[in-house]
Length: 216
Image (cartoon, rainbow, N blue to C red; front, top):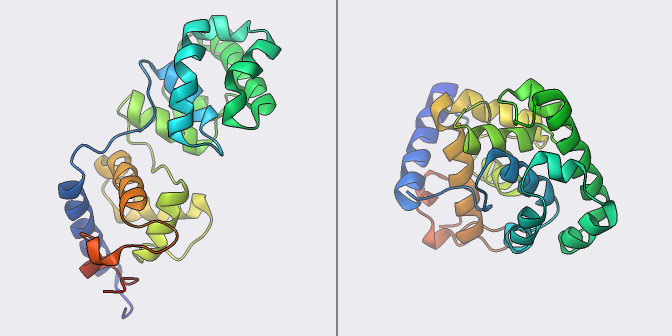
C-alpha cells in the first residue's frame, strides 16, 4: 500500500469501523458478568485463558464469593481449586484476593471508576482497566489491546508498533473517543471469526478492499 497521510489513514479507519459495525452490530464483551466486580474478576481470570473457559468457572466462583468482602476473606486453597482450570491459578488467586482486599479497604467495597485508581489495584493493568471502564461503566478511556486487536491493527495498517501501549496510543489518535470500547469488540469479533492468526479468510472479509494485507 502506498504511504498514507494521517488524514487518509483516518478516513480509511472510519470506513473500516463502519463496515465492521455493520458486520457485527451486536459485538460486546464475551465475558459473563452482572457487576463491575464480577467483570474485574473475570477479566483477571481471562489472562492466558479463553473467555469460554472463564465463563464456565465464574458461576460457581461468584456463588461462593459474590462480593469483594467475601473474596477478600477467601481461603486460598479453596479459591485456587475453583479457578484451577483457567491456568496460573496460584498467581490469579493471589491477585484476586489482593484486589478484593484493596477494593474493600481503599474504596469501601465499590470498584473505582478512574484509570488511575483501577491500575493501582493488584492484578489490574491498563488493559483490564479499559475493559472495566468501557464495559461496566461505559467510559471510553482507552482501547483494549489484546492479541486480536494487536494482530488486526497491524494487518489493517493502522500501526507498525508491536508494543500494546504504543498500539493503543496510535488507535486512540486514529479513532474518535466515543468509538474506543466498541472498536476493540469489533476487531476481536473479526479476528475470531474471519481474520485468525493463521490463514485469514480474506475472501470472506468485509473490509478486504480497505486492508493492505488482503490476499484478495
